[in-house]
Image (cartoon, rainbow, N blue to C red; front, side, top):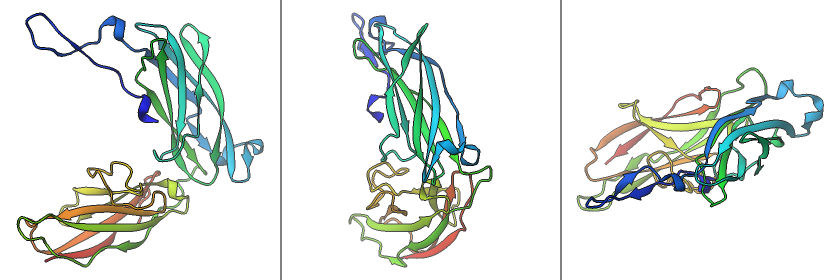
Length: 273
């Protein structure tokens, strides 16, 4: 989904001067987007008419609109994508907005969404001109709730945390420490917004745990260490070097859902030897 994002920058040069970044020439600028809107922005299951509910799915009409103007060439098409929270999941729907006059593009689409899983979808729009230049994107959240109440908090069902870890000798590679939290949520696993852990002595320095199959950036880590995406096992690989001080470390773990509800804090002690 991200392949179509970003404005292009060009290098401008002047006689007798080094080349340096500068504004794109007028004949090389991509389209510009303005007045982006979509409706509804909140979908509440309890308020949906019966004809929009089919077993475990719902059908939601959404109207999307944007103003798109070409800068160096005419706008060729304006596209939309509706994406689930997980970047690993395929788009719910994508397509082309219809010209509505005065550089306005609009369309009403009917989204087929899961009725069971509370989550936030992203509605994203971008434009392409006749020379193939791609605009930046505009986007906004589409929230789906089961009811007016925030639901139930997530739970950390179990933790896989080593009791001890041997520091490497000076000059040796860092030792790997793999932490795994099995997390569930009565409102569906997609309702889990984040899972974190931290050292009890430094609660402000929190590290993200990810259920991404190791395929995406997990906080500051290029590789979370996670094996399978979407299985509820949130993982984080950290490294211990010879410079780490020996002793006992109390690690605290907590999950938070999209309504801000939090699990109990679970504590595990790890001894660095």
